Image (cartoon, rainbow, N blue to C red; front, side, top):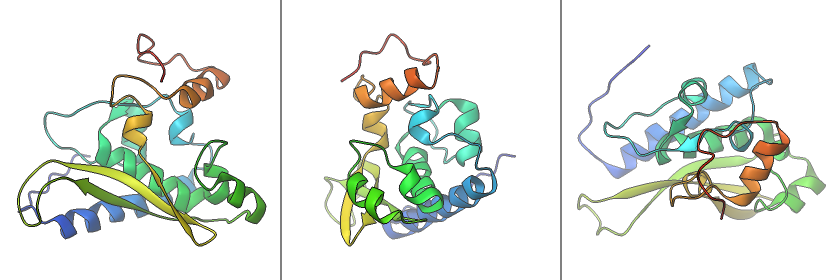
Length: 172
């Protein structure tokens, strides 16, 4: 199903909607525990012409998305799968391994270099808290936004037997 929503841009409203999408992704991931984690899925970053915010199922089906859906997917899996959504090299991994939280508080946040109340370019990332400490994750950067797939993600794909869609991209 395709649903289009047209909004007058408001930064706070956009963050609320993206975090609603993260919550929906968490519901999907809890209901379907067989779904792969984002960094094990083979999904890559791809810039969009028309802005689309996809849920986890559509993200997997497309095989690509841009920063908004990737950040909401990452936040959703941290909410749904807790410590199991973190791997070696992820911020908070060691803390989560000791505490084994069933859920990790996570949310989408916007980064920008524009002045308040002025239109400009925004970038979505995920921030999450483990053991009282905040960490940030940029799924777009890890999944090829800068032209390379992060080496740790590439290794996860190979370990999972995936044939990465963008095999010609070098790893960072």
